[in-house]
Image 1 (tube, rainbow, N blue to C red):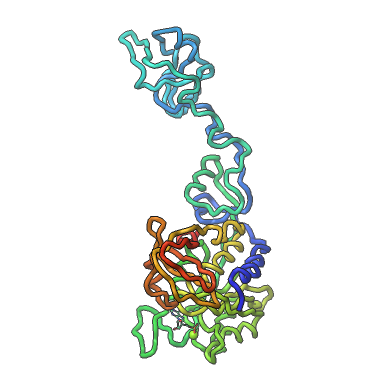
Image 2: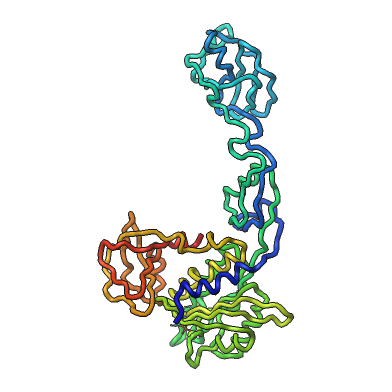
Length: 406
Ligand code: AMP
Ligand code: MG
């Protein structure tokens, strides 16, 4: 058996050495894509010192002396103001450039306009008050979005704020999916005796789509070597292939021999629960080149967790993300156990599905690797070492599904 951490140390660096291709996309197609290099700003944001309020741009020294002021100019947003005449003030609006010479803005609520059109103030401003300085958001030359960022809505907005309309991103990955098992039936069809519905394909396709990865699925593949080989051949053009079931050493497990025929494979019994048998390798393409291959267990919980804990970070690395971004172990944090766990596994570490509320972890009652409701009705995983027992109040290492999906 191999420890999970040792497996990750062997497999993940292979993806990190991959050099992904590049696409240039418009901002409206950039959401969820990974930026190839640091994006620098060519300008200051804001471009000019501007007003943070509707009110009056003033010279503080004048206000300390005078009582009533003439309004010498009106500066709406988008205007280009003249220098402020000494002893006067400028009517100004939010976002409008500060006239040269003014050093503060008094909000209109602190000003009164007299019948003669002059203005008085009931508060003496401090210098810089309500002035938003040029470059205070983004300075010219600053990195706005670092290499490897998965662009979210705010990142895309940041790029827009520096006038960038196209961005270099990592080429979209395409991942092939197949689920093996002669017992599988697709939802929408009636179950024959002995059949179960195929759910793994839907879980994985959802995970992959959330990562902005294109999916090519061949769906259900019956348990025989020919069907398995021809499905793999179809999927070999993808960047990577993920397959469920058939990686044990039973007579009906044909994935390992198929890959051995078509590429290279290492298979492990991973010392983790759920999710023992895992295979990793590559499939050779007919025309040259190869596709990464992951063979995961068929049990729905094992398959979903092996995907999240092992495959997803690998695909993130292929997409150009950094080890720091993809390693979920860095996002674990302590929670307090609200349960007891008295029968630990002595040979494998365990990931227990728990629901964390206000820092306290409650145990999902059924920890079987076949119970998909356990993933739907819990918030994340606690990681227990081999042989670790848990008493209420113990501090455990926890990662939320939300953090696993990042
Ligand atoms: P295997 O790894 O092929 O031995 O499968 C282990 C268990 O997972 C069996 O009970 C299978 O019926 C179940 N299983 C396999 N593939 C799927 C799938 N695509 N969806 C749901 N359950 C599955
Ligand atoms: Mg099977």
